[in-house]
Every structure is written in structure tokens, then in C-alpha cells.
Length: 213
Image 1 (tube, helix red, strand yellow):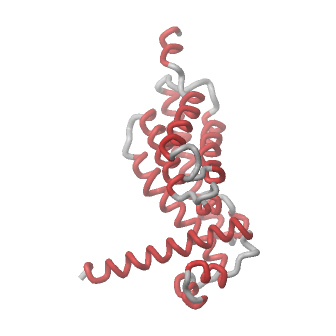
Image 2 (cartoon, one colour):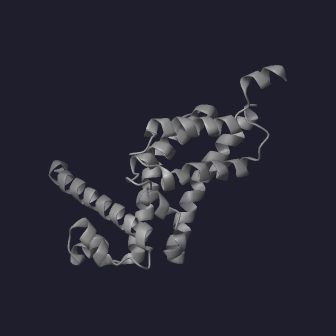
Image 3 (tube, helix red, strand yellow):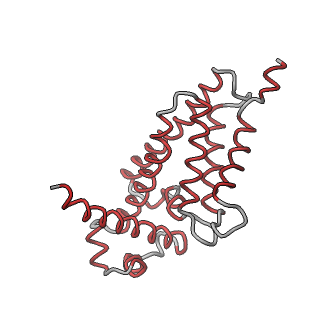
């Protein structure tokens, strides 16, 4: 019975992903207020009625749906794998690598990942939707902060404040969505390596220093 509904469900999900990506791109280019549902429909190649079939509530609901989609992907590709790693250093490496790769995999030629950028633009949300999105973001920040606290207990963390370090690390990673160009000089793997070196170099104590103290 499931085998009959799965292909339809996959098609629906693919179409929704297309709508979210197209709308996010338009929001980045023209702003939330400057983007119409008709423009989104035209970019995806469906009718305006077709857009409302997928997003019955209109533009504010579309914005919330894009953010939820972006955070669902974060849950799947970054947060869930991290929770399965007991060692704090390995977990931190996993968080950095997987989040960087998630952003670069969705980056457009010219240097931006529209979905990641839109997830940070909460101004157009209703108060209820904003609370939900903010709560989901807090869960991720707590995961990073708890990982840093565990590193401190293990004697591996530099003398930094865990909260400042968590927000700073997140800022470095999220900023990739505004500059990484898949057609640029560095590959996605190289960018992930560079961010890893920067982050671990500033957060973890060098082994030689530990040996001397």
C-alpha cells in the first residue's frame, strides 16, 4: 500500500523543495515585501493557484515553511548525527563539517545559499511562528554550547567563554551562505577544511601546550 503513495509523496516533497528554494532566492534578491506569490509561481513554472495548493496561507506561511524546511535539513544532516557522537571533540568536528557541507551544497553560482540566509531573516514572521523558529535555533546553539562545556571539562577547550564561542562559531559557519561560490577557487571540501582549521585552532588547546602545563 505504501509503495503506491511513496512516489507521489516524493514528487510533492521535491516540488515543495523547489518552491522553497525559488522563493528564498527571490526573497534574497527583492526582499520579502518586494516578492509576490505570482513571482514565486512563475519562477517554479506553476500557476499561482498551484502555489496556493502547496502553501494555502500565503506569503507569511511560505516564509515560515522555508525556515522550517531549512531547520529540518539542519536537524537531519547536522543535529541528529551530532547527538550520536559521545566524544565532544569528534562531535564538534561533525557539527562544523556537516553544517558547512549543508550550506555549500545549496549555494548558488555567484555566491549565496538563499535558504540559509532566509532562515536568519525572522522579521517577516508572525509572533507565533517567530517563537517556534527561535526555539528551534536555541536547541542548536545549546548543542554547540554543551559540546564546548564538555570540552572544557575534558581540559581541551581554550580559555574562552562557551556562550560567546558558540555564537561566534555559528556566525562563521552561517556567513558561508553569503560568500561561497560553487564555481569559485575553493571546492566545498576545501572550504570545510579551512573553517575546521580556523574553528579548532581558536577553540581547542594545542596538544603541545597541554603537554607543557
